[in-house]
Length: 562
Image 1: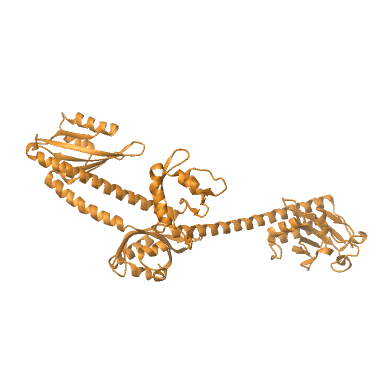
Image 2: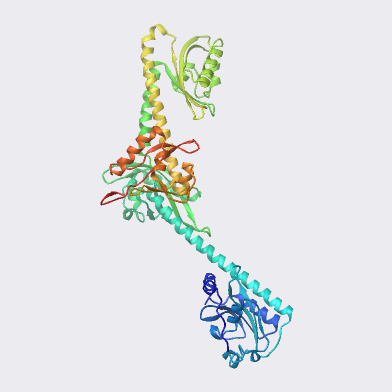
C-alpha cells in the first residue's frame, strides 16, 4: 500500500480549511442532499463529502457508510487531494497503491472509488466529493462531469459559509469598536447620559450625569434617580414621561435636581425609546444638559426686560427688531403706544411702520435704512409720523444691524424716541440716548451670549448622542505624537498619511489671533490648574477658517502629564 503524498502547500491548505469552521460540525441538510444526488448520478451505494486535515479525513456528509472519519494515511481521498484532480479507481485490487489497503481488505471493502477535489477560489484542495462501490465498475464521462459539477456546488456552499462567518466576525469587531468609542464619548461628553429599563429603572449613568444630578451611580440605580429630583418637579416629570410613552414620542422637559444641601441644578432632559430588532421595547436612553446658567440668564434678562419696558414707558422710548431673513418684526409696547396702534389688532412690520411715517418723509427714511444695510453706514434719522387724526409727531430713530460672515444683513435692532417736545426734553434726550446705547449693547451682548450658549449646548448634545461627528484625538506628550481619528482629519482639512501626526501640526493650524490664548489654556491644563476646553479658530490648508471647541482630560503620572 502506498500512502497519499502531502501537497507542497499543506500548511496553507490546512489554514484555508480552518477558515470554513466546518470540521466536526453537525450534519446539515444541504450537504446531505449533495451526497444523495451523487449516489443517484453514479448509481453507487456510498457517497461522501470528505474533508482532509493533517491526521484524518472527516465526513461532513455520507450515504451508505457508518464511519465518521478514517486515518489520512490510508485514505483514498488523500490521494485526490495530493494530485488536485479527479481520481477514478475502477478496481482497487488491481491498483498496487490500494490492493492491500485496510479499507479494501476489510469493511467497507472498497473495490471502486471516484473522487473529485473540492478546490477553493484560492486553489486550495479542502477534500473531495467521492462515490464508492463494493464491486468493480466504471463511470461514464457524463457521470464524471456531473460529479464535478456537484463538487463545484459544494465549494459554493462552503464559500457562502466562510463569508457568513467572516461577516459575523467583522460585525463583532465593529460592535466591539463601537462600544469602545461609545465608552470614550460617554466619558468625554459634556452632557449626562442615562439608560433605563422599560419600567424606568436606571441601569446606566455616565460620570457627567452624576456631576449634574449630584448622585453616585449606586444612588441613581433602580428608581433611586427620582430621589434627586426637585420635589416640585416630580409630578410634571412623571406626567410628561407617561404622555410621551403613550404618544410614542421622545421625552423632552426642563426640570430641576436638588442636592441634599438644597442647591438646585436646572437641566434639559430628553429620552427616546430603545427597541430590539424584533420591535420589542428594551428601555429608554437619554441625556440631561445643565442649563442652570441659561436659566439664570433668562431670569436676569426677564428682569432687565421689565425694567427696560418701564424705562421706555417713562421716557417714551421704544425698541424694535427686524429679522431680515423672515421679515418678522418685534416692537416693544412703547413703539405701539408711540405709533398709536393696538398690538391686539395689528402685526408689527416694516411696511406698517412706513405707512405711519409722514408721506413726505417715507422715501428719505427708506433710503437711509437701505443705505445702512448696504454700506453699513450708521442709521440715525429724525422724521415725522402722521397720526390718523392729522397730528404730527417727530421721532428720532437709530439702529444697528448684525451681519453674517458672508456680509448678508441678518438682524436689525433699533430704537425710536418721541422728540416732539424737543426743546423741553433736549437734556433728557442726551441722557436717554447714552443710556439707550448702553442698554442696547448690554441687551445685544446678553442675547448673543444666550444664543451662543444655546447653540453650543445644542451642538454638544448632537455630538454626544449621534456620536458620528466628534473628532477624537490623543496627544502623547513625551514624544509629541498626536493621534487623530478620521473626523479630526476632516475637520482640519488634511490628508491622513498613515502615520501618527506631530503636535506641531495642530499648533501650526491655530489661527494667529487665537494661538497665544489657546496655548496658554493648554499650559494651564497641563499644570492641572483647569480643564482644557477652549474655543478657538484654525486655518485649514485650503485657507478656510474653522471654529473649534475642544475638550480633553490630561492624564498624569508621578513625573507629570503624559
